[in-house]
Every structure is written in C-alpha cells, then in structure tokens.
Image 1 (cartoon, rainbow, N blue to C red):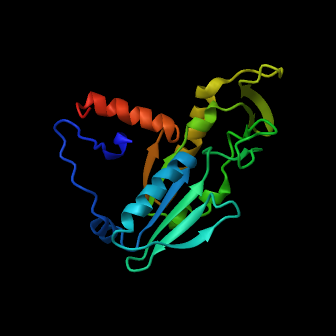
Image 2: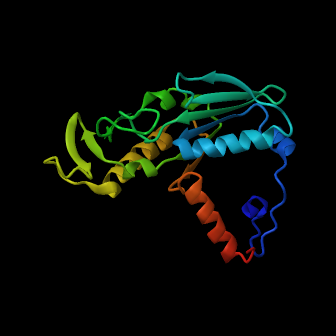
Length: 213
C-alpha cells in the first residue's frame, strides 16, 4: 500500500498545491461543461472533492442513470456540469450498466447529439474528452447510410478503422464551434489512460522516470 503516499515531483517544475478558494473566486458566475466518457467523470469527481475544501457542491441535476450530472456552488454562483457523451457525435449505444453490449455501437458521423449542443450557449468553459470508445466494435453511418465499420469481421462491410471515423467526428465538432456566435474557452483532451489499475501502472512509470522511485 506504499503507493498511497507517492507524490509526483517533476524535474524543474514547481507546482504549488491546488487552491480551491482561488479557483472558485476565478470561476465566479461561470458555467463549466465537461463532455465525455467515464474517465472524464473520474476527473470531475476528483475536482469536486478538491473544491469541497472551500465550498460543498450542491447537486442540482442528474439523469436517470446518474451519468450526466450538474453541481452548483451557491456562494460563488459557479456551475459545473458533467455530460456523459462517449462519442463526440450522435451514437446508438446498446450497452448495459456492466458494459455488456447486445449489439454494435452505431455512431452517426455527420450528426450532432443535440443534448450538449442545445446547452452550448450557456457554457463559459468546455472540456471535451473523446477517443477510447472508438476502439470498440462499431458500425458507422453517414447521410442515413451505413458507410463501414470498425472490427466487424463477421459482416460484409468496409473496415474504416479508427482514424477515419475519429477524424470525421472531430471535424464536425470543430466546424460547429468555429461557426457559432458563442465563443467559450474550449479544451479538447484526446486519449487517456484506462481506469484504476492501468492508471496506477502509468503513474508508477511516470514516477520512476521523474526519479521519485
């Protein structure tokens, strides 16, 4: 259990402790939206815990599955929203809560999921995280037609691979943002490490490179 006491120390980088009060003061009257998959949810949960040192968040919304949630910090009028959105485009997903799928995921490469675009004009900051779900078996649609798939050897479909679908999805989001009259600060996070166990392995490797171990 010694890893519980590890600390990240990068050479030549003085990173001060996170200041929850300073962060909330700078975010007064702002709305943050974090749009992505379950790994981004872990990041949101971590930040909520850090901010609780200065003020407890009040949960003001959750969907039926508790995947999309929203918190408010009343003293600072700061709102933080987590929008569960594993693909940056509309996708039909057939997984249960245990990650077991009864059919292939079907992303629509030219169509937005209006759940987040309808809220876009209220965002001051956006963090979009996407990538890992493109590794899953999928059948891709475009212009109401199936145009190919990823990892579907049993079907007579063109193998598009990950890069093509990922590129098309990002192009769609980029075009939406640059043509909108609303200009929040948008951060895009690409591939991330997997949950828990793999993240622990990556952290240990990083620490070894930094000379901390």
